[in-house]
Image 1 (cartoon, one colour):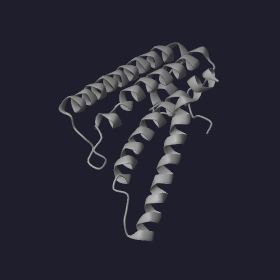
Image 2 (tube, rainbow, N blue to C red):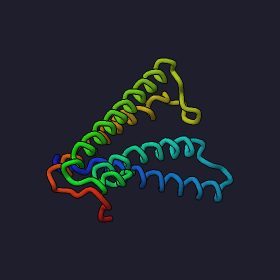
Image 3 (cartoon, helix red, strand yellow):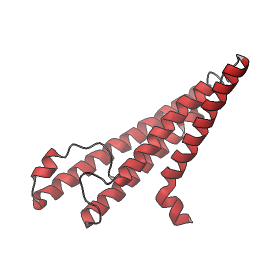
Image 4 (tube, rainbow, N blue to C red):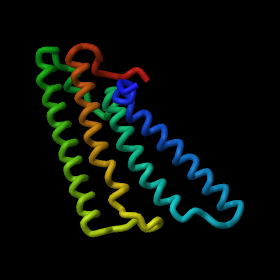
Length: 162
C-alpha cells in the first residue's frame, strides 16, 4: 500500500482534486440557475484547485517522460554523445525546478508574514500556496526517477505511449 502511494501519489491527488472541482462547479451551476444565488467561494476554490492540478499533473508528466521537451539535438546524436547532453538537461531542469520550489516557498512565507487573507473565504492565503513548493519537489523527484529509468535503459526517450 505504501509503495502504491509513493509511486502514484500525484495520480491520487489529481483525481481527488479533479473530482472535487467538478462537483463544486456542478453544484455552483445548479444553485445559480435554481435559486439565482451562487457560492461566493467557488471561484476562489476552483482557481486554486487548477493551480494545484497543474503542479501535480506536471509531476505525473515528468514521471512518465511526457513533459515538454525539444529532442532535435538528442535525436541526432549517437549514444556516446547523447548521455552527457541528457545529463546536462537533467541538471538544468532540476536546477530550475529547485529554484521554482525555493521562490514559491519564499512567496508563501511572505504571504504568511504579511497576514494576507483570501478574498472569499477569509482564510490565510498561504494555505493555498503551501502545496506549491511541495509540488515542485515532487516534480524533481519524478523527473529524476524518469531520468534514472532512461539511463538504465528501462524507459526510452522519445514519444511516450499514451
